[in-house]
Length: 467
Ligand code: PHE
Image 1 (cartoon, rainbow, N blue to C red):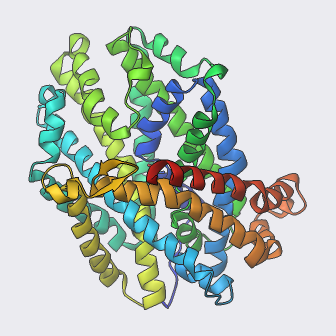
Image 2: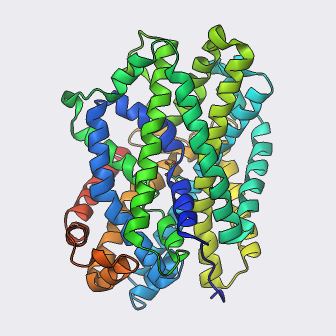
Image 3: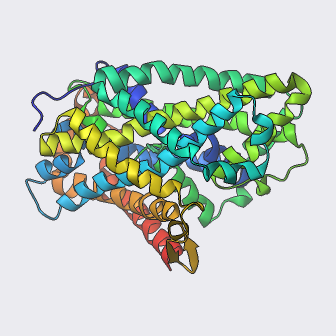
């Protein structure tokens, strides 16, 4: 076991670091597009309900597990279950899941870095052609950017929790807020911006159906970085006297506000570019939007602000997405590092080299699965379709295991670790919490309908993606 556990220096530091984890590529692009296609304000309402009524209690459960045990996810389950063999499984799942999600997320972030550099070099006109994307992701320069990115992220991690993760969050997150607001103000003053706002905000309840509702749920769960062991690990670095419910609420509010604000940027830009566009045509995937569609929108800005102006807007946008992705990657890579340190007594440095090397190899496997290596491009057949290695990692770990991990957290906290211990942890720094409605709701929901909902999502995904 590592001798002295590192901690965040302040409550704000923790909130910014956890919000840095939560605010990611999903918030900035996937959320606004999903909202617009799925009923605008009606989707926003359903999403907000999921965040606060379902995801927030799960976040508190994860943070409490981490803080009480002072351990990584594997150690947290082992210790709080009293050494049960069965309950080791969720611990290991909460280690493997972030490890693998980090891999496909690294690859997408590498592309973002490539697009940022491309824009800065004055190539926005090339980036705005669809052919560029395939050519770029299949060019060897991707490996160079991967090395660059991994050095940057592991450089932050090498400095530790307070001087690395927390300091990076305290610098990068305010920067992200300012850039986002700046872009929103710029875009809202463009022609036809109001049309985009209309699609984004006006509720269309007729569009809500089972599929939309489960999409909103999955999006909320992923967006808050749940089911990935991240909040367990970050919980273990929280100060002993800080309130878990209060901090969790602050993180959920920040994450949701950023997602909401991103919509004020994306939709008005789309409608400025083409006031006649049918939002149903927008790509569901973040990658499709970021790399195939948005560059065209930025380029079109040259009519009003010139090529340099359009490139500057694009560069700020790609930088914004890069910052969001990097703070998420830092949090997700910290999970396996914590396990190696806590369970195998490794030094931080040695853990970084070990995890970094394996992730580098696997990330290359993902990066070349778009054409460079045939066998990885057509890796498996699932539900009658050829899937690449990249797709497989995403389907197994992001689509499927995530809700399963969430389900196990709920069951563990309420039925194995027990409500009484959980409640004690939540009351620290928040004396009014004991006996409050909020406490009753959290206890009841985590033991009943939240695991049920997560189970349904899990079963639905397995049926849809594998058969
Ligand atoms: N909340 C992140 C997002 O919206 C999810 C994530 C966290 C992904 C950490 C990777 C690493 O993108």
